[in-house]
Length: 53
Image 1 (cartoon, one colour):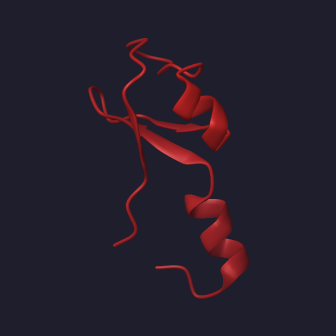
Image 2 (cartoon, one colour):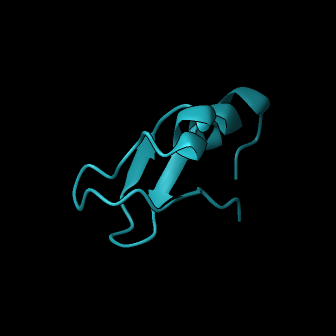
Image 3 (cartoon, helix red, strand yellow):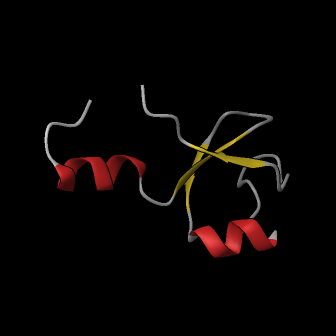
């Protein structure tokens, strides 16, 4: 887990994970919610935020 806010922002802010192939993608939240961002590998638009453990 990140020890300070700058590291946590780099790891989790605007990072999304594809629900189908589990690849990570950095993108603005509003574009993902609007459906304009797709996965680079499988071209699906089903993305979720990266989980903080």
